[in-house]
Image (cartoon, rainbow, N blue to C red; front, side):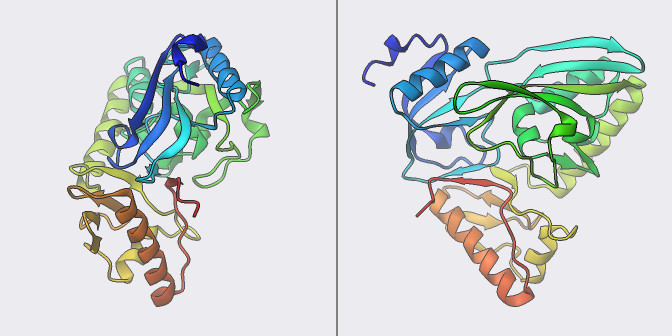
Length: 301
């Protein structure tokens, strides 16, 4: 489509933008369109337009666990971070909180903590959006986002919104049945009343531990590999002798060996090669096959 202004999309429509500006790893080539819908109606209209124009598309939140190929994608990326609403309904012992999928998870946790609502504080400082967190069943310090989830509303690639109760969703370790072609429009959480000072103390502990353990001073995409049979992936990378190993400016973190950091001007290809090398070395030396927690976009070849 030559004139996106005629599409009737209320939010921003950007053309030929480099994804390295938007991904937390700071790598990635151009996408045909980056679209920011303003609300649900605008999102559904966007999907309809892209289908009518036969343009492939993907959904993204804060792009914190995505590596986009340097060549880019001849597709549209629909970013839902401007859809930001939340509502609280008091119930016994706490509140039911409805929140848009595009809301920052960190900000959402902080906002609820200030209201004395607990249940997500051990996930504090996980980057990304609420929707992205649910999609990968984000977790830390023994808690997962699905623990306090009540229901979600998902839009599929036909532009149909489907409500699903948590009991109808099969969550597992760092996975959910939400497909790449689907987007979590909103979610409802049951959060319990708790003393604000106690919540703040837990959040401070989590943040301090993250600072200690994670290389927050460099661009990264968080944990690269999933745990294997309950054992953290960093142990296998460590045993394979890969701490500090690098390809170009893509480097296995000295601080945490399940992080790959961009130590300067890494390319997506550097990172992909490093991921492949780690998997090969770990399998050959230890006999463990690692699988990615991050999403690799445009590397299908």
